[in-house]
Amino acid sequence: MKLEDYIEQMKQSEDTSSYIELDKDKEIKYMQDHIYNFKRIAESIPTLPKPVRLLDIGPTPFTIFIKKNFPEYEIWALDRTNLMENRFKEAEIQLKVCDLDNVTIPVEDEYFDIVIFTEVLEHIFAPPTSILTEIKRIMRPSGKLILSVPNIANLSRRIRFLFGVTPLPNADGLFKKDGVHGHGHIHEYTQKEILTLCKSVNFRISNVQMTPIMPLEMLQKKEFNLIKFIYGCITFLVPSFRAIIYIECYK
Image 1 (cartoon, helix red, strand yellow):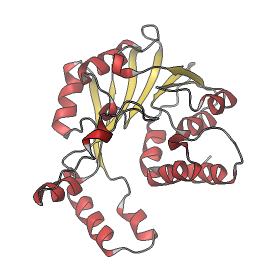
Image 2 (tube, one colour; image 1 turned 90 degrees about the horizontal axis):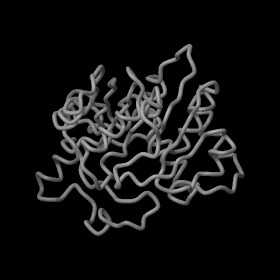
Image 3 (spheres, one colour; image 1 turned 60 degrees about the vertical axis):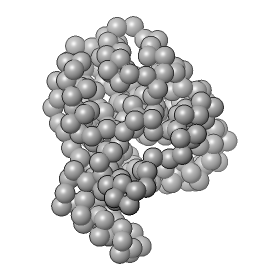
Image 4 (cartoon, one colour; image 1 turned 30 degrees about the horizontal axis):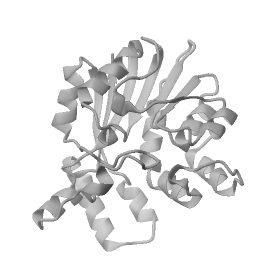
């Protein structure tokens, strides 16, 4: 199944389950805005002949898409709430509820072959080395970690700093504890910083890419916007200006 087809199914669905952001329209927009990165993650999931356990930390409807495309895999989701419990149960995805601020994942050692940990680390109010060490603990030998974080040195951030404007949301929003998905972006990373963290807990890094949220070719297909198009051209030419740091590594 193509991701575009899956998102179209989401639009047509009359499912009354809870949505991320508690709003179906916002959920669909989120999926559309991040479709490029979701496709990259899907392409990086290896096809293995043996029984495979995969954990998606900070799950979204993309977790269900993974199960649809890898029905033979045992898919798990780790979330801070049970918001999507009914949808995951219907999709035969096992849900663990866990607040990673406490730095403990309620799973035995060396349990998962693949862990997806994308756009989550920046939300956790705990030492990142402790979180990465805990993730490594639950991975099988030679297990694969797919990790991504926002690039604090992206072009948009640099422009804001240039004009003396903070690139971060209001501090009250960052540190709130009663949000559906927890905190805001407590800490964003540079490429050098996140790679140093991964190496400090002895992950073997196999692939590093700076990726845009939306690539230039997708910007050209949407309603033309000169500012966005220029922005896309600059980030196409200068990878360090792109929005996301994407990493694949092994235990």
